[in-house]
Amino acid sequence: MKLATWNINGVRARIGNLLHWLRESAPDIACLQEIKSVDDQFPRAEIEALGYNVETHGQKGFNGVALLSKLPFDEVNRGLPGDENDEQARFIEGVFSTSKGALRVASLYLPNGNPVGSEKFPYKLSWMGRLERWAEARLHLEEPLVLAGDYNVIPEPIDAKRPEEWVNDALFQPESRQAFRRLKYLGFTEAIRSVTDARDTYTFWDYQAGAWQKNNGIRIDHLMLSPEAADRLSSAFIEKHVRAWEKPSDHVPAVVELSLEAA
Image 1: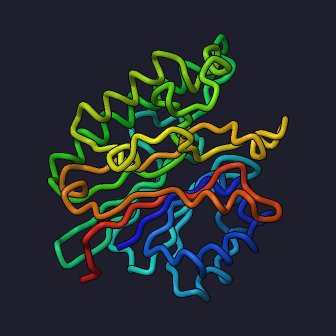
Image 2: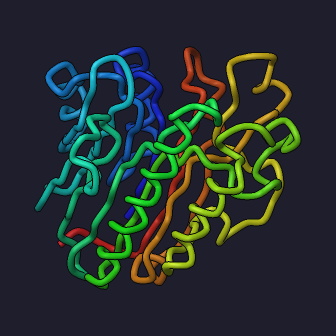
């Protein structure tokens, strides 16, 4: 079973790229972030025509997450628990039936947190704390669980072409990186780094200053696997070539393949 995560950076602006990618890559489950669309304006029909079931948690103009699945949804949960006043659309969870039992997949878009001196950085850390508590509770179910999305965290210096340029950025602050590590300490496996320690392994290149042409990238899109999912990991990789397409997102898909089959 192939699962992918992609910050699409505006689904309606990049629907052509999305449809082309769905045909080319053919993930069984795709997690999208930054759809920048309310639910009733999401281009559902075009995606359903390719054989996908669609569930969204949208927001006008920014944020928004979606799950596209060739498997039927058994359950859908929208919004990260822990703060009833948080109205930002950043989290959606789907549950699916496989030959090995339930599979849980969350598409998440963590807050950017910049500028660090503003209220946006404490919100980022608070959100990550809520995610940690939610994930710890889900681990008790002992099911394959994939937390896939744009974490807006550069885990280690190797995950940036020029880490010195990010020392004052919320994505590379010690507190952000520590919060990410705490997820791993719970028992999650970071899929891409579990299969490669190669440098120049990035998922994001800014539109400015020729970042793509210079390969001045960072790795901030991650797939975190519960022990039950990590035990079934067969491959993990980044589909870098998508960044070279016309009108690209500034992110590219990250992918895992798990030895699971639909029920």
